[in-house]
Image (cartoon, rainbow, N blue to C red):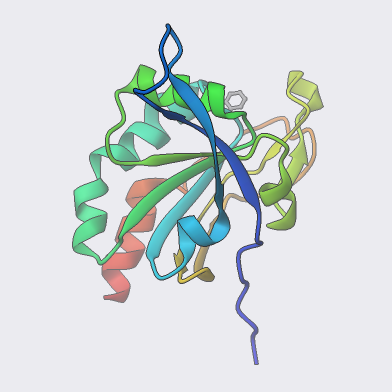
Length: 177
Ligand code: BEZ
């Protein structure tokens, strides 16, 4: 019997806007856990090497945003993008792309990514430890479908992108419906 993988329980340190805070930076810390993001929901999670990097910023994240309504039609309650970046960087990335639908999850210390088994070295790019590209269909915290780019490795010279694209994930969901 195959035991399905449960997402790890992690606390993420997010920054949320709070209008009661005066001054030029009206944000406060808000801790969110894996339960907050995954419990009782059917979601798509995708992960990538870093905020603001070209493929992620030009294709993967904007395309997930554009296809969000299509994912909703397939019964998806939320689409999350996780990256080993802190909350300040992830918020700035969301703002730069004008995101309204996809939610960004800051995995600044890489704990979630490491416990998912997806942490790789990207020292060759001066990045340190980051996430291998993958996407997953997760139902109530349990991984039901897994989309991992080929060649999982440290300091990979290439950056495969295809299996974890929103187009491929959506096609797979539609085919299984
Ligand atoms: C990219 O998304 O294009 C990218 C990701 C990691 C390193 C360099 C580029």
